[in-house]
Length: 306
Image (tube, one colour):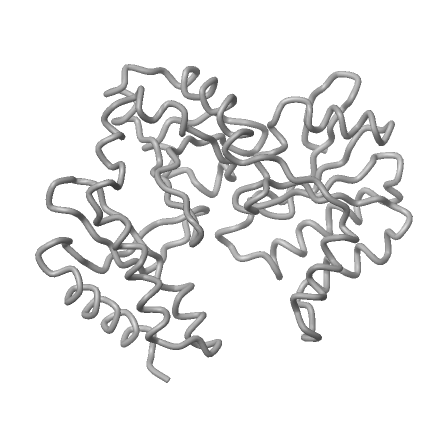
């Protein structure tokens, strides 16, 4: 098995060969969510200043799990190949009318992203921040997005409120809501694990101890940055009416949140301790949303930190 540094050099060399004269390829450190810095392979077309970055840490993890180097190389090639094609919509970023229907928002932790938030338009929300992106491409292998910076916003002549209104309309359409019971999720995880030990023991123990409490998972259909669905209009309102209760919101990760009727909570301190424990032990740092627990008040239609 080769080391991570050898893996990076290998992928850099192979992509350089394949895209010689068409893409500039380099290795760089890229700051991701919550200030996590990863090693990325970045490529740039000669006719554009935008770079496409592919994080290599996750690919190396797949390699250590037994995935073939040639397959990983092919997957990375496919990503850059899509980017390299003339039809890839990089030029659209200059024209607001071409991207306005692709603008969406994500929720991230405010304090853990202070440096990034200095560079991008955002709206503080509780202990979180709403940040804005453009959905560039989506296919069977995933999706590529571009963060909206202050520079882009100023070129478009748009204020932050305009971006928010556009994203508020687009995000539920681009990333439709997904709401299902925790029981359904656990069944799927067990099936996918093929008998292997499930790593989410802290969360699983909590679920078992709360058998009388109907826990639900709120996300989006693609399961990426699905915690943002808590901002979708009437989603929490309709759920609270169905449960006939205020709703406790557990920030499982940036990708999903757990919903629990307030009337079913026996020990709020236990709920808070569980969220903190799961974030500390089981959730990758880049995926942590918050250590706080929230409450949706159905009478006031508001969310607050408990």
